[in-house]
Amino acid sequence: MTIKDVAERSGYAVGTVSRVLNGHPDVNEKTRAHILAVVEELGFKPNNHARSLKQHVSSGYSIIIKGDGNLLFAGILEKMQSHIKAAGRTVSIYYVDEHGDEVELAVQVCRDQKPLGILFLGGNRENFIRRFGDVSCPCVLVTTRADSLGFPNLSSVSTDDQEGAAQAMGYLLDAGHRRIGIIGGDSCVIAPEMGCNMSQMRLLGCQRAFLQRGLPFDAERQTVVSRYSMKGGYEAATALLDRWPEVSAILAMSDIMAIGALRAIHDRGLRVPEDISLIGYDGIKLAAYCVPRLATIRQDADQLSRRGVDILLSQMEGTRAVHEIVPFQLIPGESVRVLES
Image 1 (cartoon, rainbow, N blue to C red):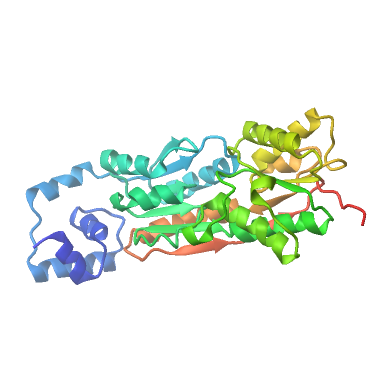
Image 2: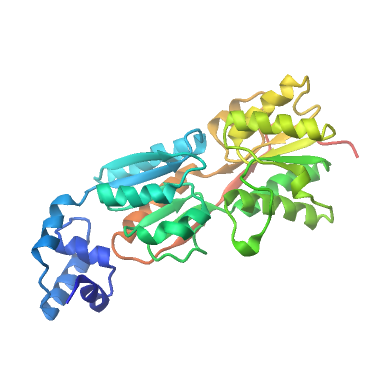
């Protein structure tokens, strides 16, 4: 007789059964009573080693942030910490490089710290496919969709990245722009049948906006891959202007990159929006204080943070993984010029 037998008979996850057996307070009384009744019915006796684990299980949560220069993540992180502390729990923060492996770090955190649950801010689909099966605690992936991954302990809350990018690109196209460059992401290859990361979903949205208007779209020509940073945006915009001087507008996959691009355009002796129009993505506070004020897709940081924590707390009760999409808003700003027809 093992803890898995108790979990199967009770209908709750192994992690929930374990928390009941180890006396954790983060289980509601109805769930606790049901599991203890099943334990008594089966005559299950945890061994001494299992009981001793009680001393080594954390009472807190972990947040793993992908990249250290994302101001959207910084805002969401601050709100998440407040929500977790309001729930009477502690939180540990971990950073991994934008091109690092956040799931590998999660495996290590689970082994060393035994958190009650993990919130991921950003994530790479391939990393989750390769290693997430080794993460046993409840997790929520925030700002990136995880519904197609199929892990029972992995929920997600995100914006519809494809639709957001389609609306941002549509805004430029409806303003009369056709020579539009795109900076950001980790690939200019669109292969939805293989599953897409966030940047690829945004690229797919850009393509959709062109095709819906009967216009040709050349991802390889129009896109410059970039890190999600001001420096990355500056370098990508510079490369784009070098190879395509006729570009009339740029869509940056983050506001941070758009701000870097704004400087690169200025350093070329050009003006936004008189010479080149510019739109970002995320809706960080800094975008509203740029000159000109940056057009952008505003993600709802308040709702992303609150729902991420709420979903994680509900998973602690043994509920199934859930995947939610929160609304976004197109902010026109001052950085896009309508071309004369």
